Amino acid sequence: MNVKAIMCDIDGTLLSSKGVVTPKTVEMIEKAREKGILFGLSTGRDVNSIQTLLKTWGIDGLVDMIVGTGGAEIYDYTLDISKAQYPLDGKLIKEIARHYEDMDCNFAIPEDGILFAPKDDEHIQMLSKADRVPYQVVNYDDYLQNPKPKLIIICKPEDMNRIIERSKTFHNDEFKASSLKTASVLYEYMDPRVSKTAGLIEILKLHHIDLKEIVTFGDADNDYDMTLNAGVGVVMANGSEKTKSVADYITDDNDHDGIGNYIEKFILGK
Image (cartoon, rainbow, N blue to C red; front, side, top):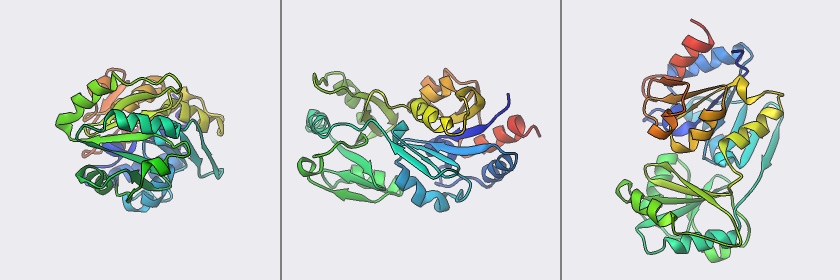
């Protein structure tokens, strides 16, 4: 396979548990780019917050493309092109939030590098600290006058099954939304047309690259579709069973150079 681009999920994949990219993985990304292979990120995080953290993660200057907000946003560094698509209607988000208001959870909307939440509690504080993204408490009735990229529900791991069960009883005749678990403590709602695959197709078109010419790295359920559709879909050893089930290759975990080891062995051919 002639690899033209490498696209990586961030949390649980590219970042180690210490919140940085390991030195070997950085080195292998640099070597792949020297061979003319583009390197990009495909993540649930919004583009703005990613851009502010590239230096912290140790990959400043190495990223050519970003697929953000689960595929709803793209940004191309090489061409300086940005695009957002398929936001959720504000009225729909308010209705979703009301559907869960009696449960022990909070909500977050990522926008402009900030997490907007309706209340201050341990859930939003945890997510803000874990993702290194500031949060702001706002009145959702006022804030949701316009469409927003997506809605994140934050809960404790032991409450996730109850959140998933509750999701099965949500319905809206006017607007469509899809939802899925994206981490042990995160459950997300977005427009059904949004997916990492859709975002990848959009940004790869700018470079005349086909999905079958890329390698993707992921770990969670929201990486399932891009793992399935990529030329080679690689999943971390710490990945979900669902996403592992469609992997072409399972590499080492995010604390043991899973991405770096794969690039070195199979893309650089060392």
